[in-house]
Length: 101
Image (tube, rainbow, N blue to C red):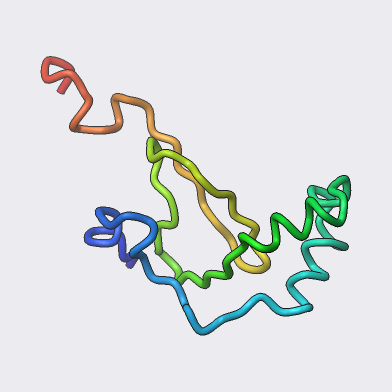
């Protein structure tokens, strides 16, 4: 059962992340050499991006970002699967016109 009831209401910064994990040489190698997205970056650009990087681990069912929240970061998945659900304005009971229900 996905843990979305209380978790979905929390800001991303307070959600379940493992603070005991550090970015290792293996992670750096993965980002620099195995992801085409980063190949065009200069070493200075890559190191600047890496200096701001944080490693997070999430559990199945965790919500890592919500539609409509301002974005200030991007995510790279090293392993696992993420599901993205895009809702129309009529899928949200708060923004659905009352006469539509």
